[in-house]
Length: 275
Picture 1: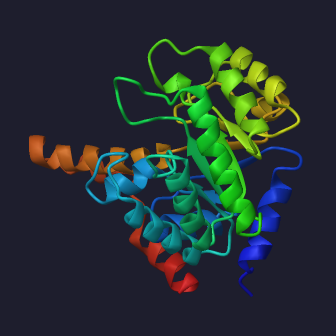
Picture 2: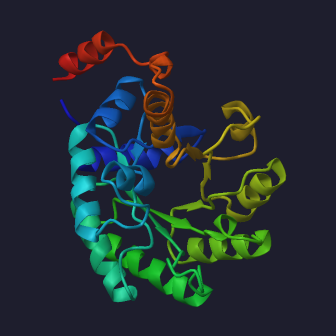
């Protein structure tokens, strides 16, 4: 029997209580079902992966399109789904609260709110404004019953000249504003990770691993990280295979790029069983 939304949300919260787990990022129904079949305990959407599948750049999807995507992935599996909800889809705190209310209604078990503005001239909201927006998200979740986990994201390390001290200050402020889990994409050295984990404790920290790294899951767990996500890396890996094969045909008239392709029999067998 497929778990209820309430059961998925409860299971998701329990995953954050101890240990370290991976929350991979599918971008469509097929990738979500495959990851569920591999035994992962939860999934997270990826704004970039979804946007690319629609022929758009990251951040270019409308709120309605993102909400439709959340409904699609929640329905695709019985796993908890964490929403990459970008900066909350709102010009002000009230609009963020309304958008979060709509996201919660899709059945997601968690959602993240980032402090990125989308404006290159001022890439991050001022701290007080970012806190107000996150607090509005917290209130919207609580008004809906409180079961959805709220993730506060500090985007400093995605921009030039990242400031670890400011990142930590932001994450601590987001925790105080009601974030259940903290996230700073781009933090990657052992020293940075350890510093952030210590600063936000006892709340869990999400580490983004979007590129090859010497760190193993054992290493990451030893640093105190509670969960690991991969953002658009799986989608980029799929696009990488597609581009190598397509460019080989277009530019060299060769079909070497098909080497390593997933067997159709395996794909058909898996999805037939799921259907």
